[in-house]
Length: 186
Image 1 (tube, rainbow, N blue to C red):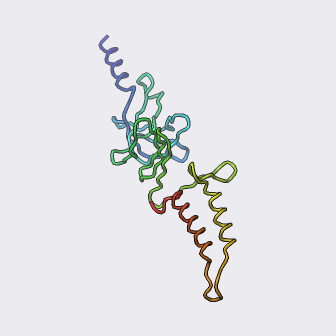
Image 2: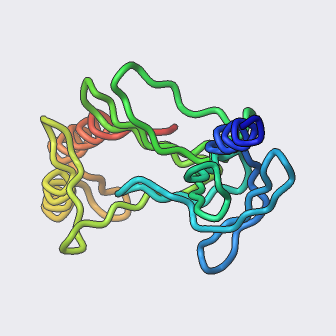
Image 3: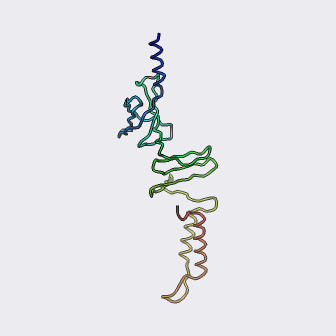
């Protein structure tokens, strides 16, 4: 009877096992070393619609029935040195260990930060993307700017002729619209 209780206790202790990420394989599996130095390999069990490729961190290994024969590896958790972006209650974030992130704010808005001189690429279904706010559409703004440049009227004799003041004022107005739509620097 005591042996059965010890066996049951061992199985209960082994239902969730903490492990450390060791390496990733080309086929998508990862190797995790458990707290008792057992190496297990399997694909991580990600929730639908999410996937990541961690380089380091901890994970939980679920051993069904406390038995390592039927285990699942939960997604790798970040090391303590990795700082996720600051969130308010209800916000959601995707982030990397190198400092890039996307935050969806429950109160509205999406914030994108591409660290280490990264690029932000947005691809739409038809190869085009929409960029604007509730006042200005970047495409319409650019079309208007190009039309204004095409319609520039110069004054004065060459080589001293300049853009006339009316055209200069229109171009300055477009510059101000761009400044209201786009941040000039990070």
